[in-house]
Each structure stands twice: as C-alpha cells, then as structure tokens.
Length: 249
Image (cartoon, rainbow, N blue to C red; front, side, top):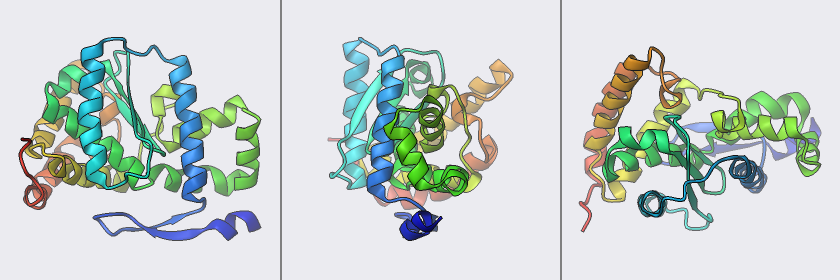
C-alpha cells in the first residue's frame, strides 16, 4: 500500500482538462503496454497485405504526429480477424483488425478509428483503469513482479485493463467518461492530422447500422454511451474540431 500511495499522482488529460488519479508512473505504464502488445502480436495472425499495412501505418503516423507525443515509439500493425475492432496500448502500440476496415471505408474513416484508439492511450485511460481495478487490489509491486515472471494470468489481466480487450481473450469496456473523452480527443487529433472530422460522425453511424444487422454491438461499440448519444456528442464537438482542420495536401 505504501508503494501504491507513493506513486499516486494527479494528472490532467490533454484538451479536456479532466483530472485523473493515477497510481503508476508513465514509464511503468509504457513498459506494461509494450509487453502486452508483444504478447498480442505473438498470438495473432498478422496481415501480410502490403497495401493494408501501408494504409494503416500512413494514416496512423499522421494521427500520432498530431498528438505531439513524438517521444513515443509508435507502431501500427494489422491483425487478420473478422472482429470489428482496434486498440492502442501505452507506448504508442496500435493494432487494427481487418474486420473494421470495410466499415471505416476510406482514410478519413480509418483516421476516426485510429484517432479514437490513440486518444485512449494519450489520455492514459488504461493506467487509470489499471489503478482502479487491479493495482488497488494486488499492489504495484506484486503486479510488476508477476509481469517480470511472465505470469500468464497477470499478463492477460494487465493487457485487458490497458486496452487490448478482446485481443487477450477478455473484453473490458471502457467507462462512459473515458469513451466520450476518447471520441472528443480523437476528433481533434484527426482534424489536426488533416482529416475531415465529419468523417467520425459518419463512421459511428455506419458502426451503429452494422451492429443492427448482427443483433449485438461490435467490440468497438460495446460500451457506453449509446450510439445516438455518442453521435450527438460528436456533432457538438465538430465546431471545435473544425478550428484545427486543414485538408491534406
């Protein structure tokens, strides 16, 4: 408990200014994120399609540059899976499932997906959830020791809490505030990267329509707020996002 309290710190989320209490350092968070990412890639079937990989890395790199976090070693990979999903882990480690690409349709739609996921990592939502759901229960020292020993259960739990979700066999939905915040930040980042933020609203409309056909929400929509609420929120943030928008040259 003393170790946990010793590293506790109040942080402020970029753009929104929301205060959050984090119980681990960013260095530890990044280390956990990279380890979780490596575990995911080790078990996943990576796409060998050069066009898909080029597209995701090109759009992803623009989004990453728009965040201003050039200190992170950004990495973008495409996973062969029918899951309509994507994720970003601390340290700038991002993965996109091929199942979401038809819904994204084009570069702007993909930018909305990547902007949303990258925002989770930039806002340190994984560390926030890890602090609340794991570290408070077992302690930072115990968690770090278990990770060093490559304990499978701990690796899976940490990966899921940091944001890997279904990739590690466990889908943990983001909280309502975190999900809305990722929508907000993602909209700003895609606009700064030169993608029309209106594409984000169109993406979520298509995601909602795709979910209706399957009878259940996709992994990418399986959290609060509802589709209608999130679309309305995005529409409210569009004027702010448009102030940052400069079309791709």
